[in-house]
Amino acid sequence: MRIEINFASREYLLARKVYLALAAAIVASALVFAYILGTYSNSAQKAGVFSKQLSVQKKIASEMDSKLAVIEKGVNAADVRAALGEADFANGVIAIRVFSWTAFLNRLEEVVPEGVGIDNITPDFQSLNIDISGNAVSSDRLMEFIDRLTKSKYFEEIPPTFHSNRVMVDKDTGKTLQTFGLVIRYSPDGSHTFKSPYNNKEGLH
Picture 1: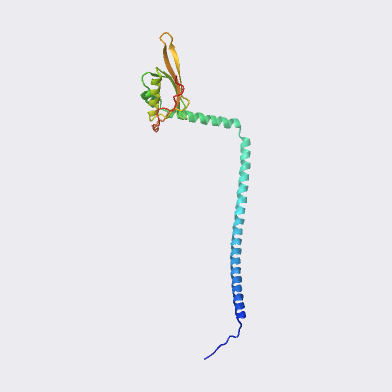
Picture 2: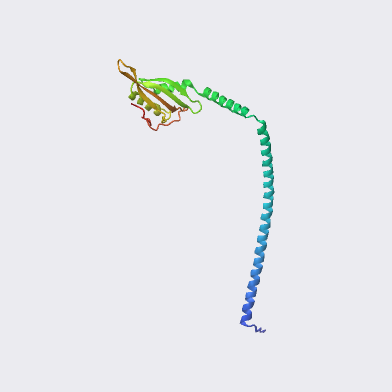
């Protein structure tokens, strides 16, 4: 039987544990430092690559700006305006050809009540806003026309440009007519859903 006796003091044992803990902390710190250094080196390398790519992109953009400046100098501003005007004209012609007068007039006729006459119709073929002017034998007939218009799925609500006036047409008999002018949006595909009979009664008297 072998008996081992440790004559080390308590202070020595405590110091030894502290030294071992410090050594472990130093090793751990070294490992963390190595990891951080490796990560930093990798990030620095990637940053360098990105920096080079950015420089290349800036160079390409600068070259394109220079080429564009040369092209702009060779282009006549009047020619550009003329080309834009021709494009607008062509678009307008296409819109007019697409617009069906027959379908529009048939749909308008369906909502015009007796006692209301239409004097002028001016459509905007791009926005499909329709400028309509005419007269009615009374304000009640005019309101009936507006009510029918806005209830139709082919016409949207009348904007605030609606106006009306009462005019004397025969002084001997005292006959008057309610003249009106309004702008309403036309929906050829019938996409409008009814919201209110009319949204502007101003101008009637």
